[in-house]
Length: 251
Ligand SMILES: N[C@@H](CCC(=O)N[C@@H](CS)C(=O)NCC(=O)O)C(=O)O
Image (cartoon, rainbow, N blue to C red):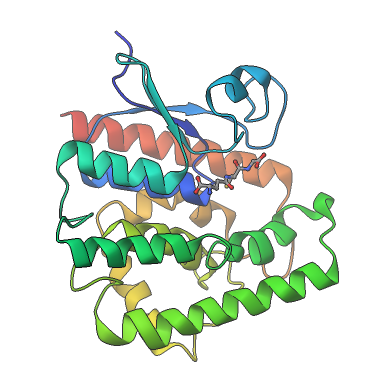
């Protein structure tokens, strides 16, 4: 019988990781179908078959084959899952708290998400030839967003919204966390004590290490760009680690 929940993507993708992480924390079984981001070949996110269901051509996407429901956009998927399963700890029902979570989720796009576009992608995808102007604007955007988080959200509470982890933290961490010295090592957080403290706290969240297998495998990319082979292997190892987690939660 087919799985009740399918996530499309690869573990190397930041927004994919946020969805996989929530599902593991909540011990919710699912199947990960590997989809190669940006590729128009079979099994790629720009292939006509994928685009028919998910016209944005991005990962993650999500499907419930039994009902025929499908959805793109990590934040829509995260909030839908919480609403569907009553995971109110991760997506509060209190109107004000929920609005604060939403506020972060909206800020994330074109702000914190630039961590991947402006810092990680230029290292990993040399072929994309980002212009100097683009990279400069992108870095300024990231710095501004990090200061807002440092002096706003995280100056007032342990996690982004209050004293418990929500989907806002999962989404933020998959972007910000990847830059730490134990992973890609491409951002210095020394002047951001609140973010530093939050990064430590987020590392204690269940399944943190398993979900970040691809990044442990990739290692420091600050000096040298990783080879395509290394990225592929990192994804493979992360996929296997995920299968192990799925077997564990099924026990
Ligand atoms: N806003 C989207 C962003 C998704 C996204 O940018 N995914 C990347 C991989 S990390 C992708 O699918 N890129 C392939 C493409 O755009 O062709 C979300 O949160 O789901």
